[in-house]
Amino acid sequence: MIGWPRRRRARPADTGDIPSLSAPDAPPAPGTDPTTGGVRFDGVRVETPEGRVLLADLNVTLSEPRIGLIGPNGAGKSTFLRLINALVRPTQGRVWVDGLDAGRETRAVRRRVGFLFQAPEAQIIMPTPAEDVAFGLEPLRLGRAATRERALAALARFGLAERADQPAFALSGGEKQRLALAAVLALDPALVLMDEPTTQLDLAGRRMFARVLGGLAQRVILATHDLDLLNTFDRVLVIDQGRIVFDGPPAPARAAYEALVLAREAVDPGAAPADTLEARA
Ligand SMILES: Nc1ncnc2c1ncn2[C@@H]1O[C@H](COP(=O)(O)OP(=O)(O)OP(=O)(O)O)[C@@H](O)[C@H]1O
Image (spheres, rainbow, N blue to C red):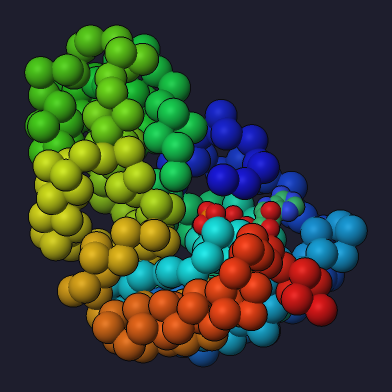
């Protein structure tokens, strides 16, 4: 978990900015990205105002339908995801989303990108599931009846139809996670960012989530410690101490991650995972 405000509604319709970790570069000159699709990190670096480096040397284009992010606690996975919809601004470099500059065209980027947070409570702000999903749909101005219909359909997809009008606070952790996912997908984003979406799910919930994931038309970039979830993914990045240390298919990515953990244990069996580049220096 990281320390940004948790109560913000971070659906694509929410265009409120969260302050950058440190002052970004001067606004880039107008121009269009040469790539046509996908997420592209161009020389991206993120530092805290104190100069602590959270991510560095990010030069990568992500266009496959299913991309996983794995790595130790504090490696930078959440920060990586948050860069994509401009919840974090790069200290250096630029992030492009389907040809849009996330730093300059934030509103348009957030319309394309849904974000599923680690803690579903962060995304649930209305009293009932139906109202919560409907609230996210408001910017679409569908009208009251059509909005409710779409909200109920989204809830039904995640097994929450019968809970639609009950208090949202009474949902279990897993049900809240499903509600958050229903609300994000109801907006039909082109790309969904998921930050450890299965942490509160039981076995049945995980299996359901994996099935839902398999059936999604959207592109997904998913950070997780649930490595089995990524078995069918197209590409997995291993992030360690703020850098991409492996980029490839799921099986070798998992092996690279395991080797990294074993190597660290061999050096210092009692060591907590190092957090940042500075910690390693
Ligand atoms: N707003 C912030 N200000 C300062 N440091 C931050 C901020 N947000 C995150 N960090 C630090 O950045 C590092 C990377 O955090 P991040 O949450 O991206 O890691 P993660 O790989 O998602 O970790 P986890 O697997 O534990 O969720 C951590 O050391 C964290 O403490």
